[in-house]
Amino acid sequence: MPLWCLVAALVAVVWLGSQAQAQSQAQTQTRSVTDSAGRLVQLPGKIARVFAAGPPASILVYALKPEALLGWPRALRDYEKPYIAEAYRDLTETGRLSGRGGEANLERVLALKPDLIIDFGSVRDTYIDLANRVQEQTGIPYLLVDGRFEQTAAALRLLGGALGVAARGELLARDVEATFAALEAALGAVPEAARPRVYLARGPDGLETGLKGSINTEIIERAGGRNVAEAPGQYGLVQASPEQVILTNPDTIITWDRTFYGRVWQDPLWRGIEAVRRGRVYLSPTAPFGWIDRPPSVNRIMGLKWLAGLFYPDLWTGDLRTETRDFYRLWYHVDLADPDLERLLEWASGRAP
Image 1: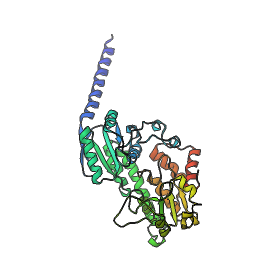
Image 2: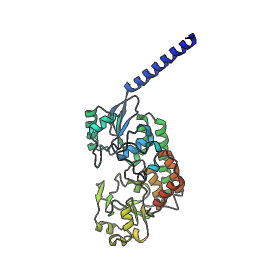
Image 3: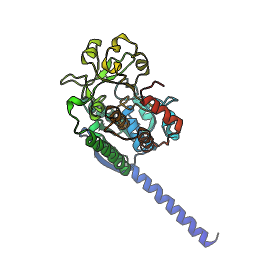
Image 4: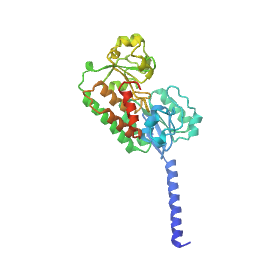
């Protein structure tokens, strides 16, 4: 073998060895991150595999670093897939650890070999206890990230840094802050009494709703609406009675349930409600994720723009078609085909698909 070939081979071996050593060191080195609950969590130097504890977390991870997401808590439906980048449409169904119907067992989590578990939403004691218990039992670091709407930019920066994509986190955080600022500038002078009285109708009968200030409905207030479902000192999802809906008499109803939307116009319970009489019942898009909640994650940024246009068409002058296409490109890594965009806009207009 010529001398120059031997030297080249030796150089290659040394380079490969140094690369392998660097990767090994990146995996073994740890760093400390303080999560939204104030927990100090030791993370590996490099995070390539993330288990999302629930749907809100899966969307957050997908927006920031899709290649790290191990799977969806619920497999995507066929009608949702065009709104996700092709490489991530058929990720495995992992189940969920937190929230309603948390059914993923720890054996399943361990089998997926995540570098990190992330939950995005409430940081109440219940979720802190779950995070501590799972982390202790599995040895896998577990981050809790505050999912309140007002904390969205902070959440993006926190997790962007933790995942090693700080620049991406900063980009999305600034987009959120710009949207919030534009909305405040457009609607800041609207007096409380002039704001629409809004009811979020969940479920096929429309009687499940979220109380004012709840994570499921805080988007209504952020968009300049007044949530008519209010109980001082109480938060969360509740079951409303027909009498309560009639008494509050909202002038605007938002729903993501097609069954409810299809029947509300003829239902005797709802026909006398001002929103129905005025034709102000709107069906939220749900592909790939709901624009209002279902789940309450960063998908709500698109819903915020939509609601602002519905509530204040003369003040919020953004073009919904352009806003939708731009949002899906930036946040969901997908350029929407025209038919898919039209389908979303059909839902958003309030006409049932």
